[in-house]
Structure formats: structure tokens, C-alpha cells
Image (cartoon, rainbow, N blue to C red; front, top):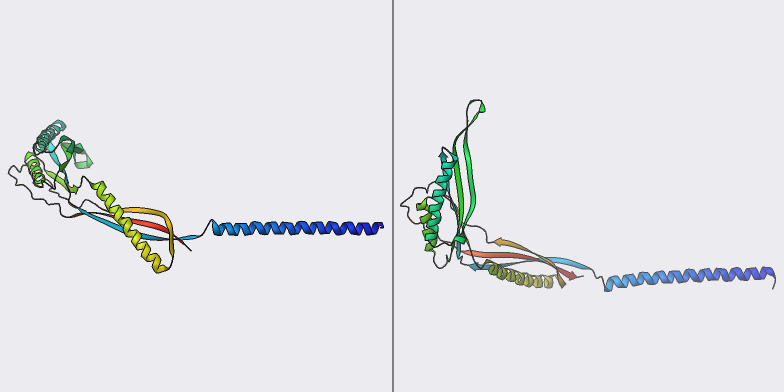
Length: 261
């Protein structure tokens, strides 16, 4: 075999080897792409979501009444005089509350304030003309569901003892956490029933729960009383009549469901 023939044969097998390498590379790349597609279909299946909101409602009778009341002292000549008057009245009020059956742990000071009263004259010159003092108490009256008259007695007793501000009156339950849990479970049940109906109507299948959120609608403070400064000195004040009304714990729960496409 002459040299020309040998060179031609060498180039043939060299070109054939390159072609084989190219073909093998293409097959390998195709295999990788195919595997990725199958993996995406088998492992990372695509999901869409629907959100369904359920509501749970639980009625209850409150057994705790919460009163926020206080004393305002105005226009005393000195700060010491303002504090002395305030402390004397608060001591009398606290004694009256305890005598009405309220425990020490259910009497809490919310605010205590002493401030000068300023008057502005000519040329905007300020002058202290007196002092004011204020103290607010929050009182919890328990067993309201069994002894509702106790709340009325406490309000009347504090009025006679010197209270001249009743700022708010709200109601609560000692079992509020249990009531919220009951409402929460009812809301989840409601959401599940709604989701089944919606999925059936849409012709889809629910896969699983992706996430959920909770929204407390009630209880909220629903009763308030404000008497301004009209209670002080009402030594013969009659006992007020207060009722709690109807109460509910209402919770909404939104559940995000994955659905298989």
C-alpha cells in the first residue's frame, strides 16, 4: 500500500471517530434532557392553589365584667394638696371595692398623673394657677354570670366613695381561650366542607394544604360608659342596672389548598 493510500485510510478513520464522538455526545445530551423532563413530571409536579375561608361562631355568657374608673382632682393650690386629696379618695374607693367582694389581684392601677394647670397672660407669659391629679383603676368583677348584681353594687359603691369618672365597661370570659379553640375548629371544618364542594364544582382534585391564616373577628369591647365628672359627690346615688347582652367568639380561617393540574 503506497503512502497516499495509507494517508487516505487514516483520515477516514479519524473522521469516523469524530463522528462517533459527536453522536455519543448528542445521545448523552438527549438522555439528560429526557431525564430532566421526566423528573419534573414525576417529582416536581405543578400545582395551583385555591383559598377557602371558613367561619366558626361560639356563643357564650361572660362571667367577668371589667370596669375602668377613676378620680380627677382639679385646681388645688399645691401639688401636695392634689396628691393628698387623690390618695384619700383612692384609699376610700379601694376599700369600698374590696368590701363589695373584689380581690386585691383584680384591682389594678392603669394611670397615675400629676400636672400643673397653666394660664397664659399678656405677652404669652405662663403662670401656674393650680394642680390636677388623676388616677385610673381597672377592676375585674368575677362570677358575673352567677351574681350579676355584684357589678351594679361595685359601681354604686365606688361612686359613693368618690369616683367621678367611669371610662369603660367591657365583658370577658375566664374560658376565652377554650372558646377560641372551639370556634377555630368549627372554622376549619367549615373551610374543608366548602373546599370539597368548590373542588367538585370546578372538576379538580385537592392535593394538600399549602398554608392557612386566622382572623379573630370577635370578641371586641362592645360596651362603654362615660360619665365625665358627674358622679363625684353622689352620696345617695342609686345602683346602676347593667346587663352584658349577647356575646360570641367569631374566628375566620382561610386555608390555601394545592390542587393538582
